[in-house]
Length: 343
Ligand code: NAP
Ligand code: F7E
Image (tube, rainbow, N blue to C red):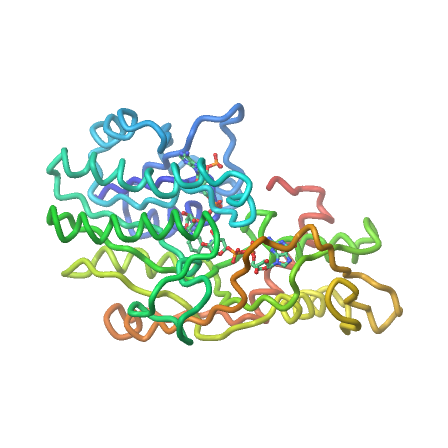
């Protein structure tokens, strides 16, 4: 039985990856920093909270990482832990750099010292492409991060490459484009839209506010992306891969798709901060724009080319964007009606 250590087990990806690895027969250790509450609502929602073995980890604390590796003795380490909200990284740049950048080298140093042959996965991000230098973005596209988060992830990416080349550690960097699901954190735009519009449909609020409606992302389903992470670590040689759907959608279009799944027919009128999303059936404004939600520097558009992963790993996405928007909107509506919104 293989043993996996997942950092960031309380997040969206941690939950789906644990589910995937358990189904493949792994013993899964879920590492999370200690908080006041030990409850992990995402693992509970997937019905696997009793199957994952919990262990405390803090990526700011090197000695703690060493002890966790000694205790667990994993075959594979998936480093998913991060301060992952780009917007917050402008307010907490030093903390973000410490966890998302230095946290990676702390794990790699611990692995190097242990001489254990562990395979290491680093959760890198399309945010490293930032102000995109070519479209679509692939493994060879030059990076140009646009936030402290993107810059910290870029360090994490290059230090992973360096430890592979300098110390012969099996370390891969998965450059994943945005992936979403009903387990997505509430700060991210897709979930803000699905939970917000579901509340509007339920009559709880008259409308929601959003930031830059023009931003475009290559959004996929998180469940699909976990299979890609696992396949990367089963490859003969360690390598880096872009994981994406190859379709780009604007925030505005995503909102219209989520709205349609909730019974709205949204038309957008106006421009800039004056733009509004109106439900054609009632004439009511249900989306407006709040300038406070704009970022100091924005990633305007992302579109990934995952041909390398498709060829080398046989990976491809299975969920399209309209299906994803509907899946998330319907899950939030179900939770609102049952009064069970735990995250
Ligand atoms: P998420 O839901 O925000 O989860 C992040 C996890 O990291 C949480 O379990 C969090 O614990 C943990 N964490 C934060 N700071 C930590 C620290 N100092 N020590 C230990 N654990 C810490 O993120 P996600 O969407 O699942 O993403 C997983 C990883 O993939 C992240 O590294 C993210 O940056 C990266 N990524 C995500 C996407 C995407 O679209 N989802 C795309 C590319 C890359 P708490 O619960 O205590 O906060
Ligand atoms: O923003 C715009 C916002 O916060 C997407 C993380 O998982 O994916 C994620 O980062 C876009 C941006 O995700 C709102 O300005 C408009 O252009 O959902 P987001 P992100 O910044 O792309 C990457 C790959 C990661 O690695 C990250 O960890 O949507 N936007 N209105 C808004 N964004 C938010 N959050 N809220 C709004 O109201």
